[in-house]
Length: 274
Image (cartoon, rainbow, N blue to C red; front, side, top):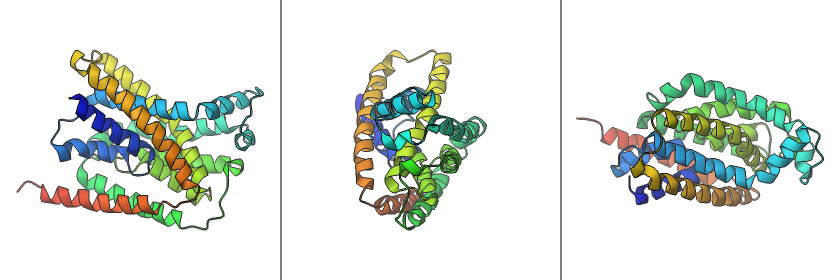
């Protein structure tokens, strides 16, 4: 893998991990469309670690406050988070579904469900669901009014993210909208809730990499580039996307998902072996 390929895939990861358009779909299809070799386990780890760094850096103060107040430590700079003193425990419970789904469906999701037909279908299906949720009444709850039921609903939805084409942020933001959260609150909670899952996935991937002998010498450059570029891209995307959602709808992302899904299915049909 060249540095250019690594940078392109890292930008795709940084953009699509946090936008509701499915990073797994874009990363699975990029080598297929460009004629590149599959990036493999090593580079997948770099990308996951980069986006994990992005969400940890951006929400560092939030995580510090969520953890502190769970143990009654007086650190509450954000009043909207201070209302939910049990938020850490709610998020721990809400992370269980995706952990179970990841352990039981990982191999199936990475093989049978990684084809263009299933990816295209999930892009369209979740996109239409997100579009419906986005058009629900606009008087929605802020972070201060988040409940345990809201957290668990979003957590259950996150379990579907193991299916390529779903989009972790897409399905969790959609679930938040159905629970009457504001767009900004749904996205913010989606990103916070993704942190333990992405961290666990990265840790497991590092263990798998260690079993396979670590990073090969020819992959050190792409590995470092993947981490740096995906982290930087992810940071920018989180900041811009959260600001965007304060005054805008998800309609553009819905249209993108539907058209992209149709394109994926059409290309899969055209590329079928004769």
